[in-house]
Image (cartoon, rainbow, N blue to C red; front, top):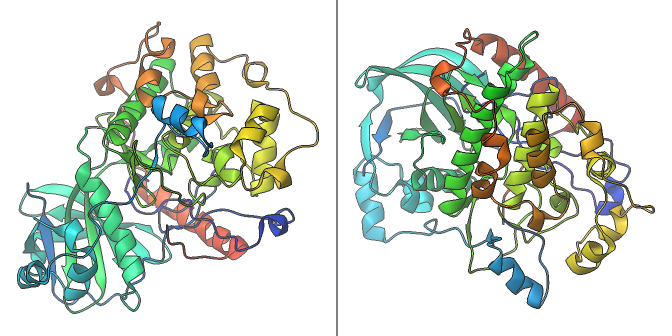
Length: 460
């Protein structure tokens, strides 16, 4: 399905200790989002809690590579290589009372302005009746997604409705961070947030996005559909360009996967769902959670408990996507954290003794294999084109410091040898499949929740 809201997510639902997780049958992340496809681990992001009473609503228009923490000289080496770690999230604090009053007077509810005032700063309200809901295209545990018509601008948009229970500040702040991140980004390969709908009479919030007909996961899962090599290169080039923009603007996505890569009928790919995104700064070191990135696309350092990391986490996920597009299926579909690490080590080799010693990862003593694994990426995917294999080898490096950057990946041989990436406008036009995608993913999400349960997540 091509909309931005009902897709799998990366919030970890396990509350067990690392040792208890060794025997856990499943450990993965749940977030509100697009429901899972049967070939992808699906989850739901945050409890975006709200009730269905809308009351009077208003929409606003918009105005106006990292690694685990190393000690001593290794921290400086990390900085010199341009490996970033997450810094404090800017712009999410409180605003002056006078400004808060101005926002309320402009139509914002007090509960939103009090917690997310900086994120909505400078935006102006629009009338809610300028939108017409057309149909429901997605459903999560605590949110719904609608295809709607913008009557003023005469175009189709996607409305994502989330509901906040009890107006908990942390839940509102979590959503505010996503809004703030999206406002910082401006690129053809990144989804555009076009406005917000709020309600004074109830605790609800709508995010208004440009409408996209498909997502990469949905297209790839259709029987009989096989991407050409120029098509794969075109999609990967757009993905890396979008990531390069994110990283250059100080943003880590932290949940790159096929269902978060939307595609329109013009062949344009856009990175979506920034619910787990975080700001980073190359000059600051700040620990944060390792409970991000959907399990099948999660890099080994996060599975080993790293809390100091950077752009390399997105590059690992990108390597998984590249391999998946050629293989026609996910390459490491683990069911638990333990199984996921085992699959990674079997394919990519286990870390060197030097890496184990220097990284001092929290779960190293638990998950370190008794015997080292040999890397066999080239052997496993020997039928892949050589340039594609070369880029995969880099992006799927066990040591995050060896994955390079999105900018360096764009300069790789993969994009310079024939066949070259095709122009997006020359890509095939696929028939709409939203209703089918939504139905399949909703059912998969329901089964996933029954199997794994739900756990709310709040980032550090």
